[in-house]
Length: 214
Image (cartoon, rainbow, N blue to C red; front, side, top):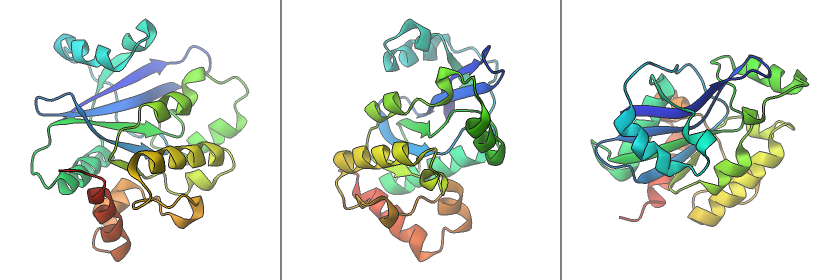
């Protein structure tokens, strides 16, 4: 698994932002799914030659500024859980293609409380802190929504509802209910690790499989 993402160290507020993270498998660059979560966690940018990969990455963006912000990243535990989720959904040991990761806000920190406090209190915010409008336009099914309780927070609720609406339009309503409160939004680490043997996890994973047309 290779990991790429747009990344900047903001001159406006001093924070680091990561958005549209791509998990790339095998030889394909076709998008094979999307995941929407709360904020980027512990994965960090790494120095690694990526000129050959950059030619593929440029096809994901139109603006030169966006194309110039691609970086190679380490993989964190959540990304491996996402890999496992899609391997199970596609019924394959090895994936080929790209899984997109989007977030309700893009501040890179494993400390979710810090991220929430920042978005509540910061007066001067970088425009990259939230990219929901662009992200929604780039959703590709199958889609998993795993932002936990963040979507119910008044800061994110409107965005979360719009994302859910777009997800239902792309996947139908067999996986997600159009009423926001009727869905569960478990984090992928709970879905594929801590709660994997629970009925709620099994049911959600079956619904993800149901989005795939073999």
